[in-house]
Image 1: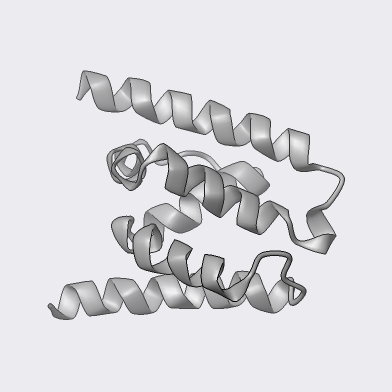
Image 2: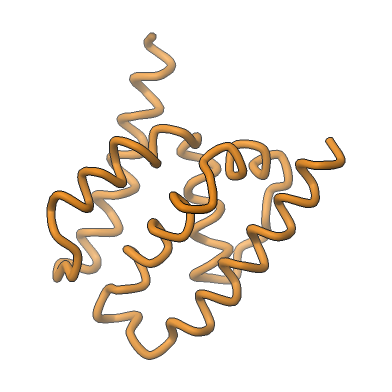
Length: 115
C-alpha cells in the first residue's frame, strides 16, 4: 500500500509540475479528474515522465516502461498527450506531438508483443 501511495504522490507531482508551467487549461476540471482517476494510476511515475520526455522533448524511451505504457491503454495515452499538448505554449506543434505519440505507442506495442 505504501508503494502505491508513493506512486500516486509522484504522479500528482508530475501533473502539478505540468500544470504549473502551463496554467491555462482548455479541458474541463471533470476531464482532468477523469484522466487522473482512470489513467495516471496505471503507470509508474518514472515511466510517465519518460513518455512525456519522449513525446514532448528529446528523451530516449526506456523500453522497460513499454509494458506499463501499453497496460495504461491507447485511449488513456491519447487523452493524456492531448491534455498536455493543448497547453498554450505548445499550440502550433500538435501535429509533431501526435506523430511522436503514435510512434511511441506503436514501438511499445511491438515490444510488448515480443516480451
